[in-house]
Length: 405
Image (cartoon, rainbow, N blue to C red; front, side, top):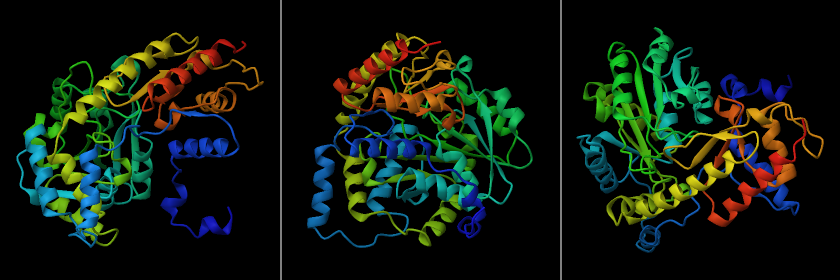
């Protein structure tokens, strides 16, 4: 191990870089070299931020709203966040019980950094968002992954949760709709998990609801603090404007939870980044309080794209894709490709080898499922325009048909 590694914080030295961003870097490098690449790896809507939200940001600049805000965020925005949680999630709370962060990821990081001591355990269903285990690692904790296969809809069962809880368990992370699978927990499924959690009062719950508004086929969204009010004092409910309002670059996330936790997270944030970007906060306020028609329009587009992608992937030899219920990801098994050889001579021995060959030989970028804790799978983000998506699906099918045994 070289000296530069020895100089690092040991938790950082053991953490892995984001697999998603690694693929995005490869895409950028190939495009810089002149290659044509369709990227299905980024987890962000391809739509523009709604016009009235952009105008609110511009108006904030012109009005001189360019100075620091309170660490926890503008009061007007926090009031709007509290109203959102009450209106959409049935969570009665005061604006003081909210916190505005520089993106949803900061809310998650703040919560874990504020509560984890070395060796504390965090349960996460696998497949999981790639950053969960690394944030746990950076905070000195231990990620406990629980495999949730397609037979269970990629969702955690009460029995599996019960088996994973130990005296060292500090948190359970739930993400619904899920990145990368698009799985959505029903009210009954959340209630069953809540019954297990009620018997273990030392376990906190982080409910990552960032894809809340991207649920298809008329399904309803539920969050665990809403389903089981007796857990309210142990649940951090996290959300943001990035996915629902196509505001990924504005970097505004928010959360609500027990007072002691929000206070601790605010204390940490005060020594870390302080308040989120003032201009972005004004834009987020417009998103939450202004017209909401954009949500239905984007949801309709994503459901149409989902149907096209799933049908196309299931026509590709060696791939099988369950129908996701939400988010904008398809999680396709590529087990049927393992062991085959590409026309370029690449042996496909892992799902990462599959995604590398797809990029190099088909010009399509996806992320390997093993980066999310379950392989061999491919995560395809269908957050690109319909024409590019059709082209990518055709390229994937063509790639699969040309493989040799």
